[in-house]
Image (cartoon, rainbow over all chains, first blue to last red; front, side, top):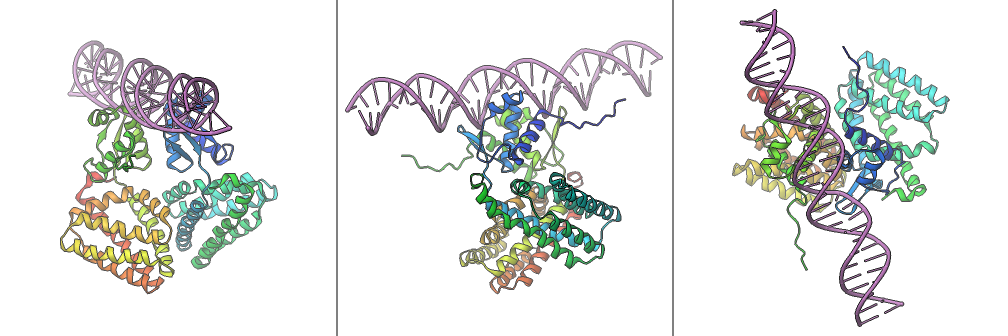
Amino acid sequence: MDLKVKIQPSSTRDAVYLTLKEQILTMELAPGTSISEKEISLLLEVSRTPVRESFQRLAQEGLLEIYPQRGTTVSLIDPELVEEARFMREQLERAVIRLASQSFPDEFLSKLHMNVSLQKVSMEHQDYKQMFELDEAFHRTIFEGCKKSNTWAVIQQINAHLNRSRMLRLSADHHWDHLYLQHQEMVQAIQAKDADRAEQLMKEHLHLTIDDLVLLKEKYPTYFK
Amino acid sequence: MDLKVKIQPSSTRDAVYLTLKEQILTMELAPGTSISEKEISLLLEVSRTPVRESFQRLAQEGLLEIYPQRGTTVSLIDPELVEEARFMREQLERAVIRLASQSFPDEFLSKLHMNVSLQKVSMEHQDYKQMFELDEAFHRTIFEGCKKSNTWAVIQQINAHLNRSRMLRLSADHHWDHLYLQHQEMVQAIQAKDADRAEQLMKEHLHLTIDDLVLLKEKYPTYFK
DNA sequence: ACTACCATACTTGTATGGTAGTATGGAAGC
DNA sequence: GCTTCCATACTACCATACAAGTATGGTAGT
């Protein structure tokens, strides 16, 4: 009997979609770049159909702009959308960390402790990619512990724009130590069931991302709207 | 020169998409119903391509379940998703009405007054469909006044599931008068810049929707997961 | 030099044929 | 009666062909 789990995307369409999304988020496909269905289908050696469906999906997520009969471009980063995404995320994360501060399964609390420890290691090794992933996992764990996984999924959608600017900051080295300390304090607040403090920490934590936007726009003007 | 504005959806795909979505939300396509690309393409007299792309989009919104090579069904309403959607909406609406209570353009305040007046009329005429639309417009106006239109758009996406259950309640006649009074009070709170009161009102307002879920599940058991 | 026009080479939108995987119903064997 | 097998009729997935709109560069006419 074959119980092997399929790790690979089950369909050609998903493979194309994931490939393109990855390239867009990592800026290998820079904002403003023109692409066409045919170009991508030749590049990936698949037919236009799965490419086309991936385009539709990415357009719906705001990562592509499709102009019928004219062409398709990678969306420019819209600062207004980024700020609004940040706003939404802040509201949802503050509410959830309040929930976490009222009751949170030990299992997930352990996960948070573990995560923070790993952050320290990654920080010392200056492994920023790892740090980015741990940051994601940290927040996701809080949502999972509160049984709000779907809410996290929505945030991921919302953050399509925001994530690109966060990615830009990876190069510009940044106060990871600050983030690390905030994460640490948040765990303490959850453990102490201090909802007010936890919420306040989260608020400040997510406000950091604003400040850099202007700087990024100056540094990469062609990427923004 | 022809300056006529296109009211009709520009593409076949959009037309199909809107048609299907309408039918799903109004329960003409009941949860659990099996449909196929071919069936719909014959019914609407278009090719399978635009139908297929509409299916993909609706699946992404959680309204269809596509099982590759097996078939496609209209999603059952998942109570957990509904509750989580309500949770998200509550957080975002509370935050926004706080903003509105701090500063809100007169222009939009007038819109709210107008809207509430119309609600009274619709209520007296027992025009529930109109009432539903006014309710939507009321909330949307608050978001627009705070320049958070995108946030409202996200809520609309999130509420794909929730809206179906809200639609079910249209038949079961309901405390519209209660909703009307709450709307009225919210406008007063915004005008008085009483953020705490406004937020509290919104919180209660959006909690109403919970109670009926169990009842609906008993009344239409086959529609739910 | 400048403008209007048009052939051409793009683009995405739509239609259709073929493929592989799956459910189903009936026949054969036990 | 029960199970097993298999032909058949589905399904969604993918590839390809055609249609229709748009940008572009060259050319002819002014």
